[in-house]
Image (cartoon, rainbow, N blue to C red; front, side, top):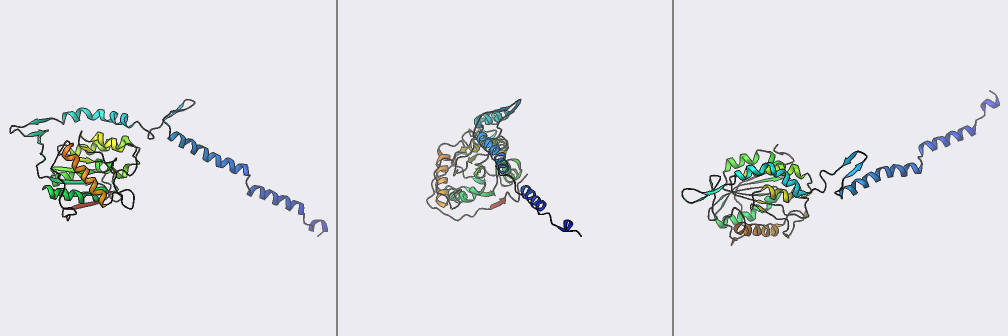
Length: 302
């Protein structure tokens, strides 16, 4: 072996190391450019989410569908297909004995002792104790409470669960409360359709549809519910100031009592379907009526 062949070429090794380093270590400008390519589109999407404007890129038009919607317009459009049937099913008259009837079904007066069905999400789980106090004070009987945890309008409207329960227990009055899980909902068109389906299930039975006790502003779910319920059958709870439990979402025991006091006063004075709900002399009475508990995570109903 000659001295030339055995001699290590250090210059070539150094050059190769520099090349490897250049490949492994990306340019600072490349990193900055990659970051901007991610950040700028996200910023544009966020800014657009706060705007009602339509964006045009060439011949392509981009318009929000589920962002800041005109809730009133959306509701009126969906209700057009339901208006004629709703009017035809709201005939109030007197029967031969002089009693008020609606759709040929007697309208029960505020002195009637009712068979009451409670339906709702987790809020009904707390509110039912205060409703129980009112029922026992005024001679009503809770035939069943259905607590559908984590449920939404889709669970109640799309499934036949409520239909079967109504057919089985034959209530003369229904208290229904839901919406706690839908304050963030923006897909209002779909929820409006489900709310209409739910309202159809209640037709022919006096009821009070109780809106959620908002802990923050909603995106229109209360307007959806109010428009689906019969006029005078929806109690708006969102503006009530109620003490909250540790989760900050549900009312605490005192909050549920104050909530029911407001509902009862409204039902007796302003509701379409009034029933006797005098303030109970005795509170926190034992709850003895049956309860069905459903978890939407395990059973969605449709």
